[in-house]
Length: 272
Image (cartoon, rainbow, N blue to C red):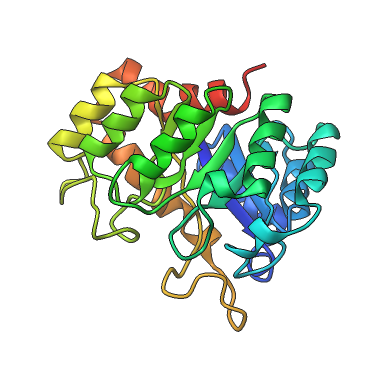
């Protein structure tokens, strides 16, 4: 399977070495791992040990709690352009566009610049929104058809109906179902007690089998993300997160299961 949403952060390295992280990927039979580093270079530590598996994307956060400060960072667009030009990074993200954290996308010169750079390099952008309606995402994907966008956690708070609005309007968007598990975003479940997708979600995946990807988003605990006084032990739980996806995917037809668990992510993040 692919794990299309991973982080390797400064406070994860305290408990999980790069070698241990790579071993966790191999133990869980991950063939493609899309990793954001905080700071960005941390992803390269994993890629150096497993170039056959790890695809680094450029993380713009330099430290914990940088979910909002990145939009005001002078020189960030040039920084990302130079990083992508090295050929070592194959995307940009995760970019949090959450109310209270970030300016509206079309009022942010930094975000618009990053989207331009991503289009120039033809790399995907992982974006994170938490709105109950599709409009903020629709405004970006409609205005930027030249960008490949991956919507983290399928919008986190979006219903199947709102997700489908995005899928119908924007063929340049893929839905990442990471963290939509029994432990995170628990107010917006996609599965039942038996581990199977809820009927509306399963029907959605069956209608759009080439537009969904999965990931672990191996961060833990989630009550205080990026806490300065304790480590993030997410990599110790990666097996549970991925087992959740394997469980609901087991109810899908084989060809759909193969696309969702692996092939779609390969097409988005490693099209060559």
